[in-house]
Length: 471
Image (cartoon, rainbow, N blue to C red; front, side, top):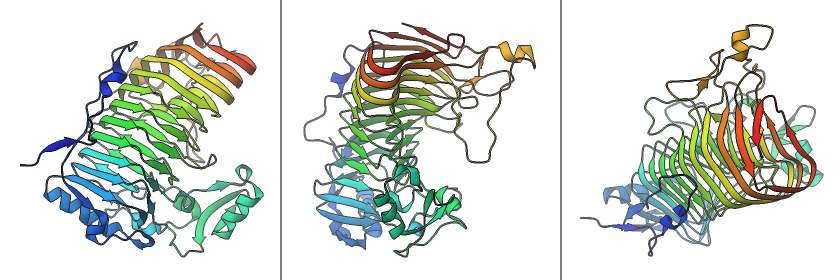
């Protein structure tokens, strides 16, 4: 009979983070992996930066599954590979001087079932329990082989380097796509634009339970970096997430419809949102829906579009969330709440405290209810305005039976309520506090206390007609 052991020799004291919370947050429980261990080299793996190790990873995981699970160790070396699929009770341990590099061969990531509009994630899991990525090494998504690049966001030297890789230019030389690359990697789709829409995440775990990310550096994703969805009991402890500041859709940590989440001691320096909470439409067969019972503490965010973010999707809502003792230095925005008609939902019991910020380019604290994120060429969803139906303009949102708030038009309406921000210090910002709701809807009702924002170009930009901000 296999004996389960905690992932670290000394059990982690996660309970210490749940002391003196301003609201009840259900705690995570430690992830346990069976005490079996193999090396990738036992299955023909070669860390020479050239040998493709996809099959070696698959065989190592399969061998452990037959034993009930265990740890796959990746030792010193550069380990080129295609996608890696997790099974139950598996830990991937990346040692300190090891780099797992994902192959630029895009054909390796095509969904074998043909059911997905995107390619497979570099690392994936679906409906799995007790899975972990740990160690002190690096996981690199080779994202430059996937991401488009805007000319306005790179220097002449960088632009030249991209063009030397191959690729094609669009929009009169203002946009570069990794298409017809000189390394011979095949194209996907009929056009560069079609291929761009297929890029996927570095790590994507869906409908999983008991997940641990610890110590590892995740970098250069084709799209989002660390992305659990509809999952429960997730611990993110001491990881680093990094990519170029101008990486298109380079979100760092995206928590999408997850319950019981702890994010601590981590560092982010990314091209899009930093620590981001999302909630999509209700899924009938998902493990969980909405974001609940989340604690975020002792993290540092350098570049990101937002240090801490809720949205833009928030349909099933976010509740019982605490953010405290975090540092944002050089982010575009600090605390960012963004959503829009068709993407909104209920946010409640959110407590943010003891956050320090410096050099925030735009808003230190922002509540935005007209955010639009849509593919080019599609029209935004419009809510009826005054002059049409008065009832449509004045009716309050009603709760949808499956999460979200439906306005008079049937669209999901943002609702940022019961949010408490306390003891925040910021030096340097474009605008200190920005809050704009939607006319005729009760979208923003928040409290901001004991907050000091200095050296801001503009102190506040609050629409008193659509936003209630108690200070």
